[in-house]
Amino acid sequence: MTDCKKIAGLLFPDCTKTPDDYEALYPPRVLPEGAMVTRFAPSPTGFMHIGNLFSCLIDRLAAGKNGVFYLRIEDTDKKREVAGAIDAILSGLAYFGIVPDEGMSGETTETGEYGPYKQSLRRDIYACFAKSLVEKGLAYPCFCSEEEIAALRERQEKQGVTPGYYGEWACCRSLSDEQIEENLRQGKPYVLRLRSFGSEDKKIFVDDKIKGKLEMPENVQDIVLLKTDGIPTYHFAHAVDDHLMRTTHVVRGDEWISSLPVHIQLFQALGVKPPKYVHIAPIMKLDNGNKRKLSKRKDPESAVSFYVQQGYPAEGVVEYLMTLSNSNFEDWRKANRNAPLSDFPFTIKKMSASGALFDQAKLEDICKEVISRFSADEVFSRVFAWAKNEDEELFRLMDSDPDKARAIFAIDRGGAKPRKDMARWNMAKQYMAYFYDELFAAEDAMPENIAADDRSAILTQYAGVYDEADTKDEWFAKIKALCEPLGFSPDVKAYKKNPDAYKGHVGDVSSVIRVAVTGRRNTPDLYEVMKVLGKDRVLARLQNAR
Ligand code: GLU
Image (cartoon, rainbow, N blue to C red):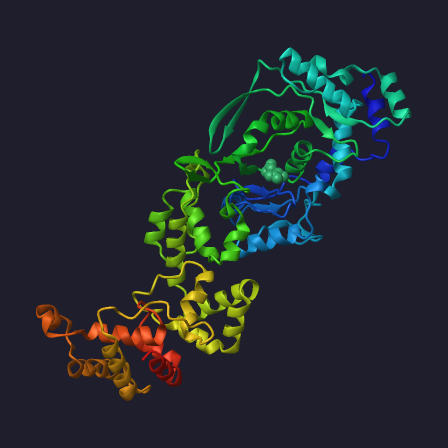
């Protein structure tokens, strides 16, 4: 290729703009000193990995209020595209309180001055930059068919050399202008390749903000920039976009580190400064004693949708991810119980270079803690919203009597020592079940140490004295009063001193009542529980359990 300008004109006859036009259209952003511009750049495949959510959280925190976090959709691979994926990404992020400042805001809508934010709408831009690379002699058309590429690979394998389209193996590198023109005249399909200027014995150096100094051999491959249909590859499109959208920091999973030599070379070829890199270590899992990445195929908990479906409160998941991001987060949280996350002095510098282990038990503990601080109203509306999508039966029950559901959640809540027994909204049904006859079941057996006759007597006598209007003291006094005539001690200490003198103590008596009324041995405050159940239901259950 000798007359690069001419070939560029032949390859891109419709391209009238120059890179300078786009530089003017998307000028450097005017932001306060040090403000970061970050992005989430997913393909719309319909799957969001928990690692993606983690990197979005970092993107969001790093950009803060002064910077910009935007959403760009990388839809260059139409085969992998799933309808509705952009809305799903946005609602997934929104569930966790992460809202991009600009970029795609719906399947077809966007905000911001640096768009379009969907790669399929940026063909002209890629064509213009591709053309400029051809003009500079840094890209060329390659007419090799798939068969020819496969044959090349075979030859390389036989000879034991690095596979790929590069150096002397790259036969279309040296096509003459006439050959190119002839091929174009014949309508031969072609891809556009980078004319790599890398050398295997030279290195690239990247100062990654998490991984530190990285050193890798330069790229030598003539990678594809535009496919036969003119659609760019991810590598090329993302370089053009990250530059034009004025991205300052690329935050992404560290599986992309191996692509850095290509990416750095692309930025060099484009004649622009590469962004800074923040490569995040993956979230790991212990599998038979071995550490491995959370896998989309094997681990349901790798999907963000898992947390939504199970009803983990968003705040809990985010808090948990924060503990993975900066190790000082937990101490900060202890000292600042109710402070908003944005007050945390997050810093990329404190992020760990190696993958943290995913600890579901810890996630659940954090979620329990988070839920224990919610008001009854808050719990009600979260469970209600969750049930609407995930549990029709629960939704109907709550909908039929919202005040009752609120009253259930109000038991043992709001005080100094709130219960911490709910980690996710899908535990709510089990938590609430005995309040509804439709769901009530005798889950626990009556205490075995109390004879059937005594149980009946306790329940019969209690039914005779129970009064819904009693105060808590009156209520307890009545249970105590049942004890002696039936051979139980109203006082636990007295019973312990002389256990042979009694059939049991007041705790056993109330346990019989509790199991009769709720079907469980362990419930929140029984007095409150009975109040919510109401007289008719309490009496019916006392009767049924006799
Ligand atoms: N579209 C790429 C992905 O699917 C983005 C990688 C990057 O952040 O550069 O993960």
